[in-house]
Image 1 (cartoon, rainbow, N blue to C red):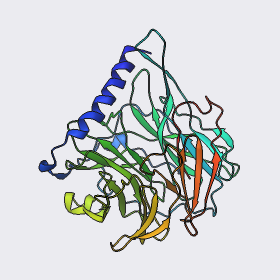
Image 2 (image 1 turned 90 degrees about the horizontal axis):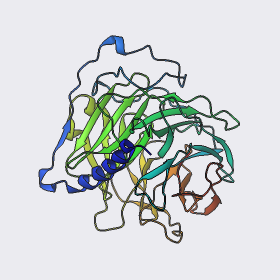
Image 3 (image 1 turned 30 degrees about the horizontal axis):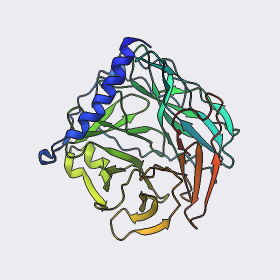
Image 4 (image 1 turned 180 degrees about the vertical axis):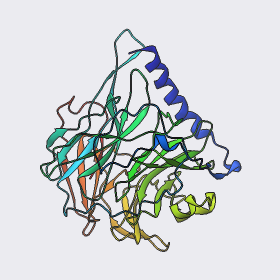
Length: 379
């Protein structure tokens, strides 16, 4: 591996360490300004998921998205989920006599939602050498957003969209235009809007704090919301109407960001806490119900539901944690709102939220099977 890739890996570790050093007394929520880019950098919006070119310069100007809402027609749900997508980072190996890591790229993959069987690898767009450990799904069970890694020449995270055919086979990936200067090397979470036009992602900030970015997938226009009170933001979920975004703040609270107010420059006033679970088990994921009236989250491994307006929580399921499982549960809820899925130790666990029944299946891949950490999954 090149020395630049080694420096990138070290920089990623340093970024994660320093983000945990934010001063809680310096609480501040800010909205980055919205300067307009040159019209020559804004191509005509292509039809949904047509193939785009490389993601490199010229970039649209950063923080140029004045309306972050995603109010287009939602992609139609196809009923019970037939597929899920897995993504994992490049595999890391150290030779016996070397302190330099070697990376083995791996692609994301499509799986049968009933058996976990491998269906197909997802092709990577130009400039992306490997998948990363993040994947998000639209509610149609056909459209997915995936994070990719540009190692070794220019290590950074890039995003792309892919649509599956009725047989689960992926079409050509559409590279999502990146805004400059957001050349980040760590992303905590990723979410795709119901209409497929907006991508939300959460990143740590050097020196403390975290940022949620709202990105138009066709033009690259972006709007940022930042908080200095917490270094970790997880569990992004778009409301079905595209007007708000739910997220997990510091693993201890479920919050909602009003995107209409954010676009109008409300900054910190656009965010509110829906559920505070300080003192109990940590939260890592949140998802909207199909009608947008409630949020599903897991405190530890207990899955609960709370109204978006706030109020008492209702327990939906208590799946038994697999041996060695994390204290928190990172999950994906399908478009019907009935099924929840999470992965551990190369198995996918499917939870029926109407009755609490849990079934599991092996996650089958062809590229370096069962090597490295379990992938992230979404459906």
